[in-house]
Length: 342
Image (cartoon, rainbow, N blue to C red; front, side):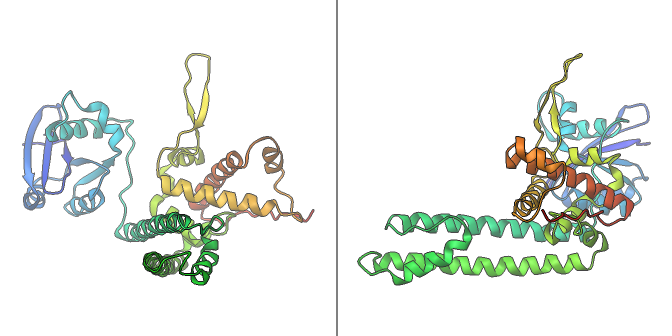
């Protein structure tokens, strides 16, 4: 049988296949176990295979490409409109098969194992940081029950630790002190693990030319640069810098009809982790320009005068994202404009 394209619905152990011929007639609809998937596609002639960009999708895409097939990954939200009525594995595979044949469909680039390895480091670091934050909040809450408080921020933990060590047994009973010491030990262990993961990320950053190039931009360090390079890959997949900023969710939402354009807040679509890193970097740049002996860039100064800092930081992150696209596509360093002393 002649198969024009196939829609493959991925899962952990059960996979659904839906194939059509050149006339759009369904020629195959099968349910495969995990052990049957690779032998099944090995027997087929090279064809177009569509999959949702989900867990293990990049792995299966690389495996199927080794067999000679053409594989395209589709964002799940773009497949949803093609699902008919009830949601089943067969309906999802049919929707994927239909979506992959659309001429204006957008696809997700297939990541290499090296890209996924670096992103795994970032995911582990983000998890450890969240656990550290939760431990700090639990520690503050428990100590607050005994009237021991300190200022906000992780930098004040040393002050909190000294106060716990110096307080009397009447103020903090021995049983509670044991629980508090356990949390302090947990914080020390998490801090050590975070530093170890960050060392691995920095080591990869130093060996990657594109990542080092991005780090020349203000507000971008090794963490942000390595995450951008590993997530984006080839930036030429985006037609312009605005498309790249829209992919990061830094462009405003549009709700226009006729001659009434309505521009809302930023879409917050795409990768939240990348967007968070860029906005935090922009906050650091704005904080540096607030020093008394420096003046901000000409366009940033009036923006800070009329809008709050979070809004200005988002605008600066948008501008930085456009610069990132230019640096990745042109292979250039950041065109730095030094801030002049006031």
